Length: 117
Length: 114
Image 1 (cartoon, rainbow over the protein chains, first blue to last red):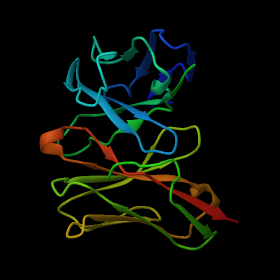
Image 2: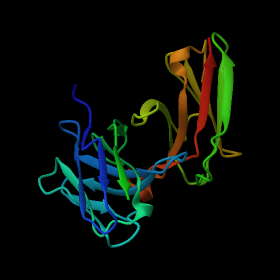
Image 3: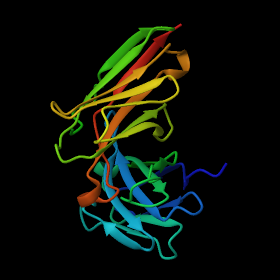
């Protein structure tokens, strides 16, 4: 399968701890997106990358959240000093390009379920 | 639109019937719309998309209708099957200003009775 993959699939942590969530996009996709989905709701945008740079990080809720994509492929979402309210499914998506006419459909990974105790 | 609450709207249909799932979007400047299907424990799966210069687009067993006047989107599924049971989300995008950022609706849970 050449889809978007995310690891781990589940992460349980204690309040105050640091976590990293990883996303491997579809090979060749230049755009990568992070969303957060709470129970019973639609995904909410966090940040997206075009190549290595964060093109839009307006959805990051506060400065405890940070994401990187140093080589323009794999991305890591980092959450410092986790809080119970951070518990959600974190979804990653990738597209061939971003905001360009044509094939920029976003394809989602299975998500990482984060539980903060 | 913004997602509210924990109780998704639910649509229950008989196998073989046609299903219509509706969505009201929030921004009149949105120019690209997508329907996703999400099964339990999985990520959203792309179904079909439509650009604002169209009012209808058909795929395999699915049709999306766009009414920009009232900011309404619908997904029609023909001959609904048990495998269609899932939560369906509409999403909107303003390509020029927001790049790839998608804004998702609340979702509708489709339940297909065999």
